[in-house]
Image 1: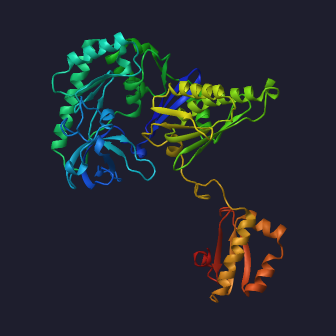
Image 2 (image 1 turned 30 degrees about the horizontal axis):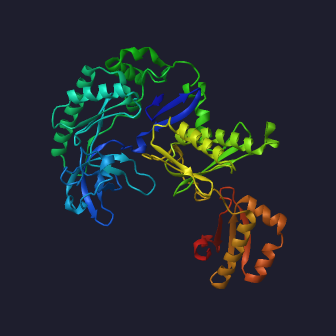
Image 3 (image 1 turned 180 degrees about the horizontal axis):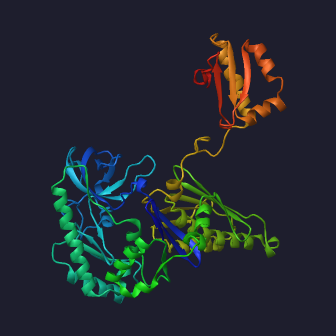
Length: 504
């Protein structure tokens, strides 16, 4: 963990490799997990959803399945819960929400691109061992806790500490070996927090924030840190003290695993984290087999292509086995890269074509096996008729790539710019328009030095030819501050910029 007043970073390493990175800055305006008193801006029966103003700029999206409904309202059986409710016939949203109404909501997904945050009215409060759900009535156990007897024991303990009609609970993975007394103490803290949230909301006017989720580092310590880690290293004395104070209250045995880094070499440099983060921005990831994985994020989905590169070893005699080895290695790397880059949404993977159905199944099993390490919910479907594997990965925040980078001002995000030859032809057409207007007499054409060099070396007669055609007094001026594919037309003695007037 690396922390300073301007940003906080958390890096998770498994088998001496970086597998997950999280960061936070004050200017990121993170709201995931925060609870707001919102005001309904619009109710849309057509999509059974509402837009709610929570005071963060973009209105949040609230689907009918995320409302708090009475058991009689949702036309279903059982104890509720968001997942079960999505499979039921839900009542019309317009019967439960009105424009201008105030509603308590929690952010379940950050605003991404042009979309506002995703909201739910089914508030949940995470603790170290429990998640408290005030509007539910079910008791659940983390799917990562295995063993029927242990799950049954934890469910019974949770049911015993939960007063009637006081909500629901989920026992988290970290709570696998927790005592009943610790569970009870944490439930009381979470229940008191909920009462405080309701009291704060009742005294506020919408839109307003009524509860902030824990900071990045505090949340990670609460949610992840356990005896399954070998060590936790942090480079900030202030953060180290905060972590040790918290760990001391929940599990003193973990204190020996917390270390303060004091060396002259930066913590992330010592463990190669900074270098791995930089690699996560590259579109091409090399494989040890000689192949590669190419990752291309787009607005609609992320496409991933697997290439063989060069055949190695005995591959020349048995290309199918070489392809299988490359695909298996790629499956492992793809699972790692999705987690490292925090890529979400729809993902399409084009593995190298294989003739054997058995080999295709091996690659799919390998991919699913390594996706099982991911904290985000993922689902990989069977190989399609086109030989593609389609999958989805839970997306709750912008990817690291989108958070740390901005669209290139030169190329507009497409990753390509016009060649100097193309720019010269654009200039030629634009000057013809300027001449046709009969409004210009003299023009200075300002261009990038490479474009000027192209004219001098490849088309030295260009200006003379254009002067003859356009009857304009033309001069070419290079400017190293110009973008490669940019040009400006400056008119008359005052050199007034008239580019926009004549450019296509």
